[in-house]
Image (cartoon, rainbow, N blue to C red; front, side, top):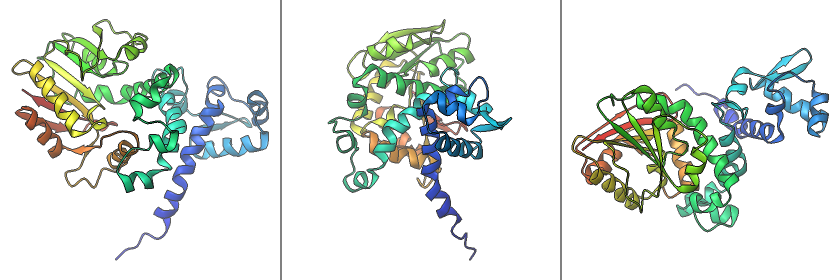
Length: 331
């Protein structure tokens, strides 16, 4: 039997430290200051009102993590940092980094209690009674931070999701709870004859207006309580993993009833393996759903069961190689 030694344990002991270095650098404004040009540590420390010696330690760690490059005795952002961590980049995941630092990092500190009790950690961590959507979004700034993070993820994953299946025969694509509309926009970009609708809560629609698309209409409403806009294909991106099976069944049956024969539902979620013991990002996201929401990640057989119960007759799943996978269910 070949043993791996202590390295896997040592790597895991360091993992949260690496994350926190990135989180703290973003929160302190390091990546924003180094987006346009390099700076020496002393000048950057003076600019940001930080201790120069402590900042130098952080900057050197960020170089070792490939988030910064050393340049002429100073530091500058690596290419990936400018693309994904600077707020002005169209692909920025800055919002989700901020959300991870301010919210998830603290929630995950109470994972033991979540496993003991099987419930989210909002009351324990933040003294808030409800899950994420009724608690964290009490302010517009909190909502904006989260949605900007989801937009960054969507810019990576949505094009891969809409190309996983041939959707060219559909006419109207309605994304339910689609945040900024990145998924429906990606569908319209790929299929020129497609017309799109983003169906979101009124507060979210006001934010989505900052991301216009010429073939995507905005429709305000709540998919649990309001009639769904007419469409021959609906989508749910990172929605079903938030909710209990009772709420999922209600939503799936509502979508099924609204679809014409031959209509479809496109689902974007992380797929667990059939034995649910991988891939690791899906397992970790399922634990994230435990501490944040009422839901969990699922395997394709589990989605097939849910969708079949709602009436769908054909269900296929595809790995996309992006942060979420694709499932297509046909009426």
